[in-house]
Image (cartoon, rainbow, N blue to C red; front, side, top):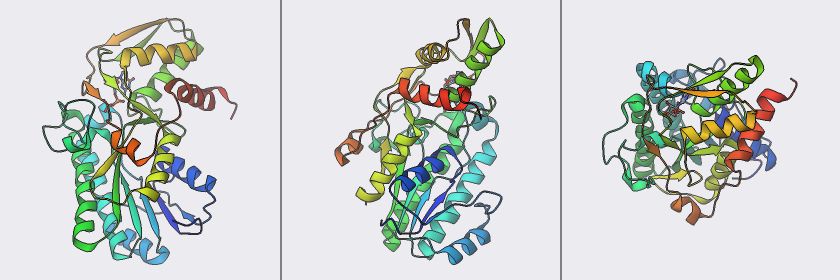
Length: 309
Ligand code: GDP
């Protein structure tokens, strides 16, 4: 990739896509293409074909997806399956048809079986049943990995896949019904502090363990792997450490400076008990995360809730 190459970042307004755009700009890339979903509906085969024919990108980061937290995944199963399959099928196929030099497909750690041994090694893919709350999303992402591999095998395309752990960062979703846990808790504790509320409700038992990666670290890893990874299969991207939801809630409470109580709503699902990535493949390729969880949460809290807009 040269910094004059034409790079299409699918999903450039999302948390991941916008972080990739920042990373490319930082490296001096001047020919970055992004389209909003209103400008280009990636589920529409003809529209995606026309886009590739017109713009002929050299490189593609496929960070566009329908994403959401545990409740959204559970409730909108059809949308998570349909939208994600359509988006990735259209983009990957047109990337092949229009001679894209390299494509990176981004998935998620929920592709792994619910009861896979921890930490999650890449080889555990398809060794057991998935977590039911996000099965449709996971099935779509697994299909994306297999699609990149199939196009590499059959057509010689240099399409690679990466599976990030749970992410947080600028441009995250703060809608309490559809967001992931970290932005939800930042918002809940911040609003409780502002309103002088006596308690904050956190879902589940607090026991599940999750790993969190700062979006700009993810973007740096993607940029690095776009230069250094050219193989079938996929690479986990994470920090290699996890934290319980109870400890995460305590950390966010402290960062926000909220002094009330935490109440656990055990009617809400816990989801998969643990999701910790094994990052030895990534480390061996030469990349490591640099932002600590505390630093990352402080940055996001400051940007999203404390800075005047
Ligand atoms: P998951 O990693 O796919 O399970 O997605 P989430 O980030 O949505 O949830 C992670 C864990 O945090 C689950 O055990 C949730 O029950 C728990 N959790 C606690 N409070 C919240 C909340 O306010 N929102 C969300 N999304 N999850 C929460």
